[in-house]
Length: 499
Ligand code: ADP
Image (cartoon, rainbow, N blue to C red):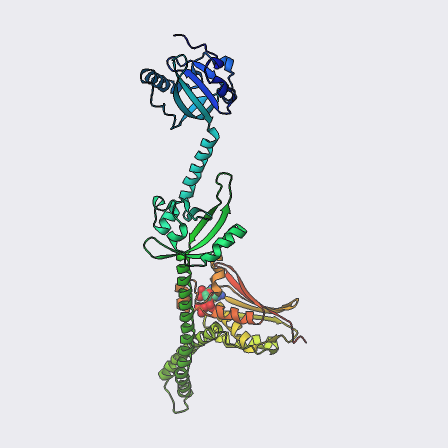
């Protein structure tokens, strides 16, 4: 039978198909030759009806799918139906346009018998390329959303039915996606927070954010930071709410822990200050007894001592002196820490102050044959707290002597520079490595433990000096060349008391 050359109009209801907006293709069931190709098909594939009628439908099937098509045709021919032949169930297939580009079509195929008694296959073809692409994009987006750590949920605005539920939501609430899709989100998670306020706000403002307490599948509560936005897309007639829920349970817990640790630390710090202050007070009293009575003995007030006894007395007093210094350091430090020290500033003759300190240090320097040189050029009365500045200078000078080997030299200079009183203590001692320079003013910091241990000290002297200088509104610092010596300096502002 030859029926491949039928024109559309020959085909009973061909005229009808000619006009409908969907692409309709009719092919001979036995040969696969096209007998009808309507204008919508022309538009979709780029082939005209004249070109296509009489040709094999294979033309629009990508080569890799042709074998399957043959097979389908064969079955259709044999049985009148094949795997594709079910008009109620459209299938998606790849197809080729005239220009070689590929598209995805949805095909509803139905067997038809023409007036000539021939079996035809009639296909209604819909171009679903764009829909497929957006489905693929959506799928990719969903996969990405699953990677998110936080819960992402989409639900319909009014019915509150869940339409999307990511892995994060599964983790956070314990419900699987399959369990929740289509269910009412509020029923599911039973929010404890102002739920009643959320719906109207969403409807009015299109967004809501705040903290919510939500129910986990096992009945526990989960605290989340929620951000919700209403989306009205062309895709869905019903507006949906996109919810981002961030678990803040952990964060809250961590913040509480931190606060607790901080409180404990503050408490400990307070104990330490109290402890230091008590200890130093309590140590000073018996120390004063020791020193007072030892001095009386040494001065032979209660009777003469033999030379050996005198020598021992001297050693006891030396030790007690050092101990007093350490205790005073601790006490000063405790006071500084507690913020309990008052400044008492007066216009003070500076040269005598320096000379006094140098005089008290002279014996220490003599012991090591260290020469002390002093140059003071301060022709005014700086306004300062004398005893505090004496303490600073004593500390710098005693360090300089302590850390300078025998036969060295320590040079003290004081001068006015602009609006500042500058005092420098330069030694020819060990010096300090560059990386250690910033550390020396830290509390309890001693650099070379062996050298310092030999010299004694608490490592508090410089941190106390720093606090005292800063209390005057001044600065303290050091420059040093390791192996050659150091210069410790402080600058005090000459604000008041100039003469
Ligand atoms: P300490 O009571 O141990 O002397 P300081 O705070 O006065 O404590 O000094 C801290 C550390 O700085 C010292 O232990 C020492 O390592 C270093 N240092 C201080 N002065 C000098 C100096 N003139 N030369 C070298 N190192 C010094």
